[in-house]
Image (tube, rainbow, N blue to C red; front, side):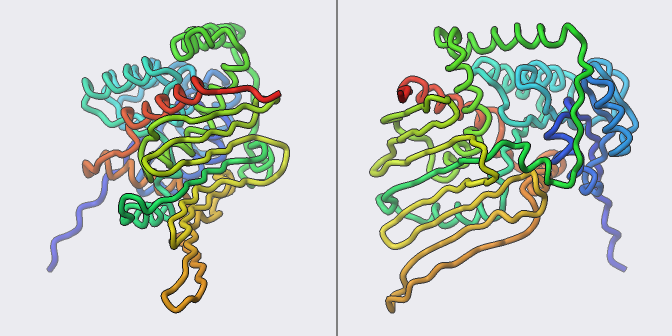
Length: 372
């Protein structure tokens, strides 16, 4: 008889921060990935949020303090950090020092110093830091990467990146996940976060930290733009420079012109009040247009697709639409994280990788011009 297959281990998970993104994407996906993960504990400063999520997602342990969770649930294998951005580095380092693997929702860190602290803690703990750039784990994105990797130097003429989307609430309200908002925070929490934000942005922006407008732009870059530019880096690498960057009067729209070897990349991003998610990366060569198309991650099952437009040798115009899977990008990144922890697979979205985004944001801020 053939030898019995050894069962795969189920990793125990704790989540720090059970707000909107946890309720609409992470907690439902973890529940569906019960063959890989078991959510043992959640941490939040809102007791009402803890109570709601524990009941809805069948989580046995709730805590208002990270240290208490680490002490009382030592069997946790991986901690997923998705609370306020200002606390990402603090809690990542703390969990790494406790010997836990760490998943961090983007942005991993707001400043280079914090990014380096996280990577130093990772190296010392010999644990995995996995940053949640789920768009880079979409199968359609990987198909486009295969095509782009096969191109030779000089074949790319132009690259366009677009991410103009409506408010997240438009999609969350129709997602069928029924998240709730809670405001039972300790009175001291807002002031603590405000002070921490001031300190971090001072490290990140220097003199620009005195400008609320620049802080808002930095938040837009570390938030929405991190998805786009992280994926762009994987496809075509780091830009040589920023040739131009503009900001709209509202501050909610940015345009950037990146310089690459032999071509330019135009990046446009913004948040408006139109219920549409218009996000894609398109690469133009002399004989093909290669594009990855993203849809909102808040609606589970919407496929991420690729499109290749070209001309056959007989002159036929061809448009190929590629939909490798309906499996969502969050599930795919979870599978990659599981492989990294259990099988030792390499992690492409680690702390050093995430710090590259901050380098690009610095380049943008240096060239940024306000439009009247």
